[in-house]
Image (cartoon, rainbow, N blue to C red; front, top):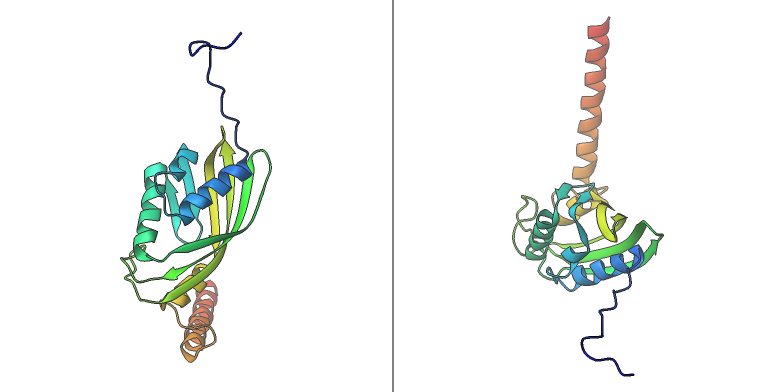
Length: 179
């Protein structure tokens, strides 16, 4: 007996694994499709960029990416690897772009090419990202945009020497106060 329109029921969509959700998020981020990835975020999700700070909630996370895309108009991200289990996904990636658009985290654009590697460690709740810790080398980023001197340069060695001299002086002052 053929089913009528009234007899058909919607078959629930299969629940995506954390690894599949992570892949979908990174596809949306790479395509700069801001309307796609928030659906994969828990209502009170947290993106904890270790080098920058925390962004709590879908609006704050989306705002971060809007700022990123504005600051780096040619932003690209490539996933190198995704691993996951039933409650976590870990994504290794490489991002690049030219800092030629608007300000980023209060820093004015420098026109410099940037390429950084990083890792996202995602924790899931009810099939959505609840907490994401993002690790990348903030000093390497700062060097590439010109905020810090090139590693090993005369300016870099000078900053290191000045820091070490200050540290030694503070140590001697603490010793004198304690005596």
